Figure 1: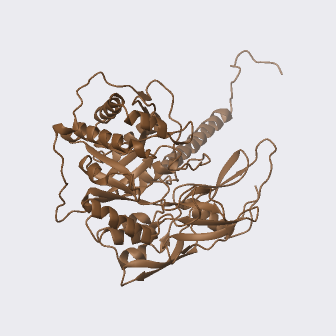
Figure 2 (figure 1 turned 135 degrees about the horizontal axis):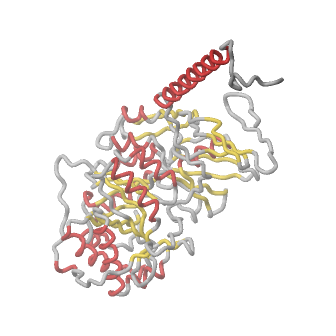
Length: 501
C-alpha cells in the first residue's frame, strides 16, 4: 500500500489506536497494583515455618566429640606470664548453703550434634549455667585445642541476644579424636609435669578471661590410678589461680570410682560434679544405665565423704543398645530409642527392678537386642531421692539427647509430685529429624505428633514405679528420593495410604 506524504506514518484519523492504548495502559497498571498489594499482604501474613536443618544427623555421644578444627586460631598457646599462684597462697573451705537455697541446674552442651544447639535455643531459660564442651587437651605439654570456633561463635552470638547473663563454664576433657578415645597417656604425662600443669592452667585461665566466662569445668577422664596424686595437685594449683578471681571451678568424677580423693578435691573446687550414670556402659554387658538402687547407694556413699551441698549431681538422658549376649553396644539418644522401638514394634516399659526404661526387639538380621535408657521418668525418681538432702545442684548430660519431658521435672525440682507426673503423660519426640528413603531430593512429608505415656506414682516412696509408652511421638519426617536415576520410593505413614513420589 502506498504512503500519503501529507500525513505521519502512524496517523490514525479515527482515533481508535489512542483509545486502545489508553485502555491497555490502565489495565496493566491495575493488574500490577493488585499484584504488588498481594505481595505485601503475603509478607505481612507469612507463616512461621519450622527452621529445619536438612543434613543427615550423625549421632555422636559423650565419648565421640567432633575432630577439632585445624586452623591457627584453634590452638591456644601458653601465655608468657609465669605468675601462677600455688595452693598454699589461698584459703579454701566448705561452701555454705542458704536456708532458701534452690539447687542450680547446669546444662552440658556439645558442638558435634546440631540437636544440642536446638535444645539450647529451646531451653536456655531453664538452666542456670551452661557447660559447653569447647576445649580438649591437645598435647602432653599442656596445650589445649578449641573444639569448633564457628559453632562457639554461633552459640555465643545467640546467647548474647537472648540470655546475656547466663554463666558459661567451658568444659575441657582429654578426648582424642585421632584414637576416638580418652588419651590417658597424654593426660598422665601432662599431670606428671609441674611445667605442663602450669601451662595447661594458664591456657585455661587465658581462655576464660579473654571470653569473660564464669569459670571452667574439668572433665579429665580415664585417669590412671598412679596419676591420681598428680591430678589432685593440678586441681589445687588450678583452684589457687581461679578462686581469687571469683572464677568458678567444677570437676567431674565418676559416681562410684574409689580412686578419686573426694575430700581433697572438694577443697580444690567449688563443686564436684557426680556423673551419676554408666552403671552399665558401651563395653559392658547389658543392664540399666543407672538403676535406682545403684544411684541411691552410690549417692549415700559420696554424701558421707563430703557435704551434699558441694555436689552437682549429673543425670543422664541417653541409653545403650546391646546385641543379646554381647558386651559391645551402641549409644542412643532418647529420640533414637523411641524411633527404634516404634519401627521394631518394641514395648517400652519401666523395668520394675532397676526403674530404668527398657525394651527388647529383633533387628533386620533377626538378632535379638536389648535397650536400656534414661528419660524424664528416671530423672524424676533420681531427684526425689537426691533432694532428701540439700545438693548443690543438678546437671543434664546432655542437651540435645534428652527426653523433652525432662524440663518440667527440672523446673519442679524443689517439689516433685502428682502435678509433675501429670505433665509427663504428654510425650514429645525431641529435636532431631527422621529421614526415610534414599536419594538427593528432600521433602518434609510429615510434621511432629505428640505421644502418650501412662504412669503410676507410689505415694509412699514418692517414686514413679510403673511407666509405659502407649503412643509413640514422631518428628518431622524428611523423605529422600530421586537423584541421578530418579528412583521412586514409597513412604509409609500411620495415618493414611503410602504416598509415592
